[in-house]
Image 1 (tube, rainbow, N blue to C red):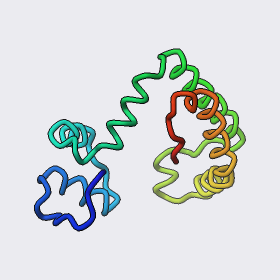
Image 2 (tube, rainbow, N blue to C red):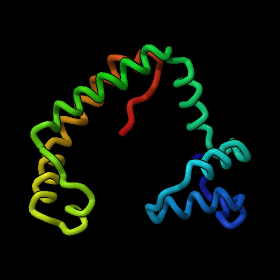
Image 3 (cartoon, helix red, strand yellow):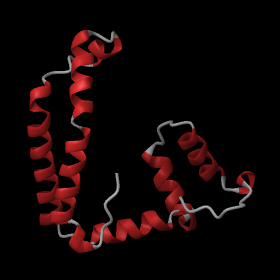
Image 4 (tube, rainbow, N blue to C red):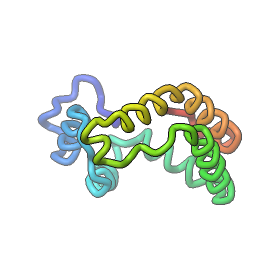
Length: 132
């Protein structure tokens, strides 16, 4: 969000305050709230609107190819991590879920490289910045 330095946060529109508070607390923000805020107060979302306008210029075939290649390479990267066991395994912090999480974490660097390569291949030509 684009909020000028020195802004009195109490004077911001309520929905902007809500989004800021939720993000500061690492809480989920419903897409309805985000979209409503963008529509009602676009001045706080300049970067988002620029990014959306760039994404809108990407042909659907390139978007599809980007998503397809990223998905294929991600599945291949994590194939040897096995099955997480699902939410009950995670909730109970079982050895299976611990092993799965360690495998995933161990591949973070490789995953970031894949993300960058696929982005550069399909999206950099449209002046879309790579972010993580």
